Image (tube, rainbow, N blue to C red):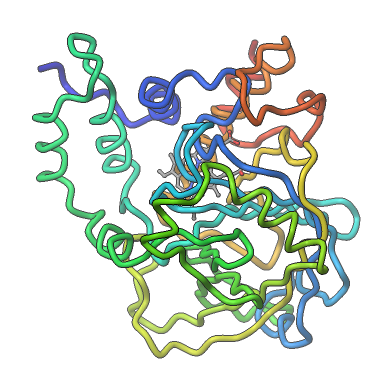
Length: 341
Ligand code: HEM
């Protein structure tokens, strides 16, 4: 067999296209989703942890996108895959701060290499049109970092509504306050409506598309709210491996409330939700998965925006008219593909 290709953002996005289909004009991962809008307001105690303008207590406008993990635009909403929430905060003065989170407490992969190996093992074999089971088995034996997520997924079913899920940042970040005091944290957004899971029975009978209608229906009663909860790290907590949850019993602090007020439309379609678009007072950990995400998202963004600008958009929940707007991505891949063209 050929040597495995290097784990580059472009190779990973190529592999997404091979596994899920080209998704022309659309996200190569988390392809099925919907836009939403609202605002975020920090609690008074938030500024003790970070000096970011995100946490100054003034309401900050938010563009959001709820999604299903994976590159299948027609995935049923019962799919036993993670759900996503991406947020873009418009800070005072216009600067942006972004997050992209999942409704699971740990990630599948400790490194970009294992993520890529697992993804690429699902690539259809040209001879059969199906993934090669021997290759999948070899990858499963070689990389076991997905065990914590697999165990969690086996015990949990998908939510009946995006409003009934907690969304986890998963990576460690360093919060720095106005006195230059720094500490390691993780965060999650906890729904005020409470977490819920579909029953096994509902999983069998629910229609393919209930998540967008459920959110629209819930919003008729008023905004949906989540508390942003920080977990304060202690010495020795893993900072570079998103497959490892921190030990239970860590101090938790509520630092703000996200209010989703409206859903639908295309206001989020052209946004590249890059987890490294941060503001002063929030710094990334040296987690290799976090570092790899930024250029991978930019690679997907450059391809889909280029296609959308030419009017090439695959059918489905496609962007409508907003394709050419939005913030340009940062990162090496975007620079090389977009600027040098
Ligand atoms: C090596 C690891 C990962 C790779 C290569 C990867 C890759 C991607 C790509 C290419 C996209 C589409 C971007 C676009 O076209 O705008 C995407 C979307 C997304 N990813 Fe990841 N991802 C990784 C890890 C993660 C992790 C750890 C999280 C959560 C903490 C996450 C959450 C999301 C979410 C929520 C979206 C949808 C964003 C939106 O709605 O625009 N991903 N990912």
